[in-house]
Image (cartoon, rainbow, N blue to C red):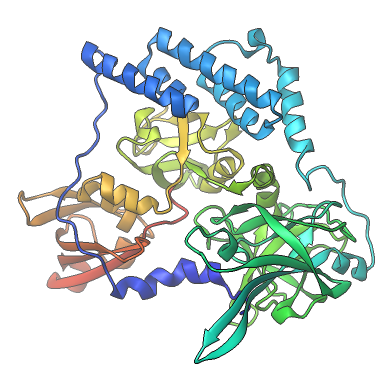
Length: 548
């Protein structure tokens, strides 16, 4: 069957899935506390742990050694990372070399120039990393005839064999679109188009083909090189020379009203061109970054096709259209494609990083001023590095941070298992002026950040990122009674009518079967409802753009 908006369905599926839940947990987790490294036995235990990390993840070991402050352990880890860097360079694994180089630079130990990595040498490695990647070295396209642009698109065809229904056999297939970014057959499409091919749980027969716009009868074998489930992108390699290669343009200049064109194979109808305008530029349908909304007609099968300007430069990648509302369609900004291409070309599933925190854009005196931390996971990398709720990030990885999106862009472009330097204002909400720096390890982002929070912290704290309410206990034992001390503006708690200084009793907390959504049954005296005693059910997804 044709691929129909799987990504959009996944985003909103939690609403429908809240009727089937797993068992509730009444056991509060033990909350992490920072170790006291002034105690000799604690330091010895941490050095032992760092040595174990050194065999599995030398960057994590270096970061933990930095936090410990033991010079001998730091140098041991530094030399190990340096050795791995040289090995990756010799094997032309420039994506990992980039990760290791940045980690060494941001951790603040040693002089890379003294170890053979001058600024010029670092630039050369970075250039080699980008030169190898298809689609990143092309100049701006010249204006061509529309038929030329169409020839650079393909129909992506996932053959899943025969499906048996009521004793009859039907051809089972997924159809999407794609477009060439290199002459030797590399092309971009959506992850959800090829999801069955890369799902380790899927044991069924499936094969991948593409069909050229100029030859729709021939199936050309293709393979998946790399894919990103969160941003719904995939890099494929087809065994053919591309008739036309698209230039990756820019989404930064797109504004509401900008004219764009979409090319694809809706319902399998190849060579379909539609036009329209950008309707919005900041829709948060993904858990990382923002997407474009546009009104050019797209249908099932358009997924993965290019949105281009009049000169044929790709500005976005179509990923969904809404079957409920005609004209409500979405596309992934091409900046994300360009940021992810080195990782996609390196192969396999992309693992995005996070610092184990939650927050929103901080507005100070009416202006975007940074990223406000509203929750920091105990034991997470931000917590271990000294960041706390109330701090505001103003720089990360050498980039100025004024909004949540700024920080997300840094995360998208930075590999997981790296170290970056973060500059932040301590206690920003209390008028703090002191700026601090911290080297922070970027852990792989979990599939369900909210579940990690719920399973690692007590309810009083976990309810901040999950439901948007800060609680303090007012009783002990099994009866979980609290007082609400803070409501985050725009949160689920805010929209559900809860207010500060109200009493609240948490009766049960449960997750759905696939651990993507959570709900709580609470007993409250809601001020906005005349202090009438009531039992309410509140629900939330366990992932959102505000986890980072």
